[in-house]
Length: 411
Image (cartoon, rainbow, N blue to C red):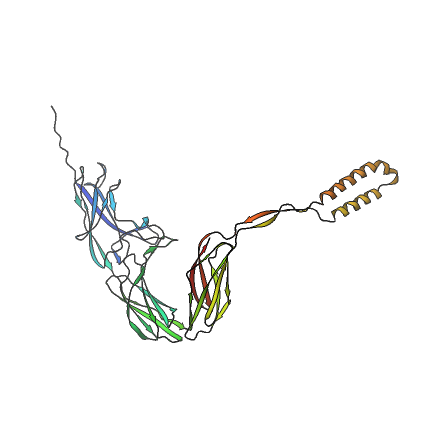
């Protein structure tokens, strides 16, 4: 008679651990660190005895931060599941992993949902303590049409979100304008050479149009706008505001037929009494393309006409064969023949006469070979290739430099 057998799922055991990477990319236990630290959570699901002798659990694991679900990850063939691994990041790209645990205490758990062979189970909690990340602020300046543009960069080693808050600029110890909100960011990313994490940055800029020409001391203070980061102050730097110029173009494109030329007018405007001599140059030109300026330099302010010239397809000449002997080779051959005949003793002259004639004939042959000339065959030079090119004009005077670009269309 048939016997009914009931097989019940066996108990499972879920174990959770938290790790991070050291500077050598080795996993280390993690119990806490600054905001933006890489956190790697791994859950291992086994039978109640802690091994996989009776099969490998299937299904997935839910990772929790307190009562907030972080993500659901499937179990692999080894019976474990994890959060994204930084080691899988594309070098030079955005880092992969969990970086955004906010400052405070976090109770991390993993829940296994079970399958046909194993019951569900919950891990014990792993507590992580996250602290605010430190920042390092730097300042820089650049010339502006009037005054100077001041830029503060709030640097971090964090893989989390960019800093928020405000930056206050100081010139010669006096606050300039109102605090400037962080409005730009860069990163986080990975170093294209080493693969290491490059922390996110926050950027704030302010243009002070009231700065007269002269030398100043610039610094800035960052006030954090959230609990993720601490504030910081930039080390002072010395900036120099000097007369400058602006560069503009009468057009954004030049169209020519290969072999032709086109032009546009460049205008130099002086600011704050600028009187320097400006040199002009082009980059990005196509093959056999040239640019000229008339006039070639500008003192202070003015205009110049930029002309771009191209080359049409044309034929050139190529040498096919050249003379391999010097023009005096025939004379040398006759002299050698004469010396040979004169040097024969009288009593042996008859016997060597035939030898001498053979040598003489050989030398005459050499003379004939030396008379070869050359000829030239036509070759086609394709000239300037058709297409579109981005040409950049650079105007420079001492440490000052400005660019303007236009598109060159060659047909």
